Length: 78
Image (cartoon, rainbow, N blue to C red):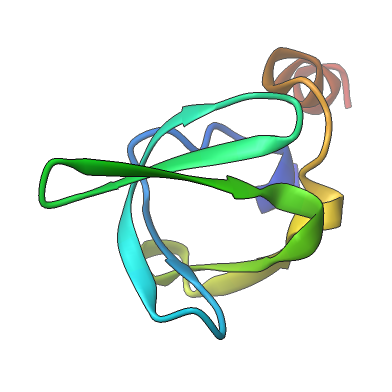
């Protein structure tokens, strides 16, 4: 299973090139919602690259586009 097929909610994340860091608190088909110091910001997946320091990896957001539950189901079937 690749990292991009797993659960993202709860992971620390950095939006590359934007200086934004926080924790993923929600995810939709096209957005990641990141919380930092109690403030939530929404980021369009396809327009950004996200670095996950706990997993020591960066993922182009376009690879994350899609319903989270469908992405996770695919990983279980493989």
